[in-house]
Amino acid sequence: MSTTDPKPCWRVALEAAVARVPHPPSRPFAEMMRHGTMSAGLYMPSRVDDQSPHDQDEVYFVMRGFGEFVRADERISFEPGDMIMVPAGMTHRFENFTDDLTVWVVFWGREGGEAGAAA
Image 1: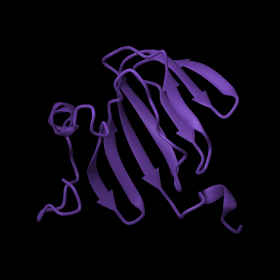
Image 2: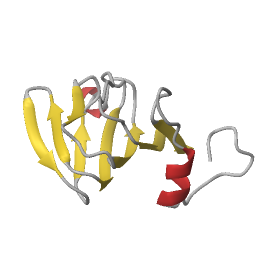
Image 3: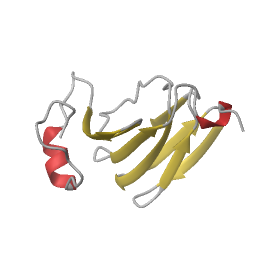
């Protein structure tokens, strides 16, 4: 299911992905598929989300957990079923989240994000 797997992956079950995410102190993320500029994986932070801004645009799909999401100077509450978009380079993090936080994250596009692409 990573780029080193011999067979391409086009479907990933949530529970199978959960089993592949490393536990702290490792980074709580595992890539599950890749196609062109798109990379998708499962992110399950524990207690603190210490991620840095990314080079590509990204979307989170909240599968489990509740909390708050900070994006630049904005703060929102989130719950299962929510989708959250973050442009490339923007500071963001999950805060005050439950222990079961589980989110799909999809990165795509060129470095610097699509907003910077020529029209």
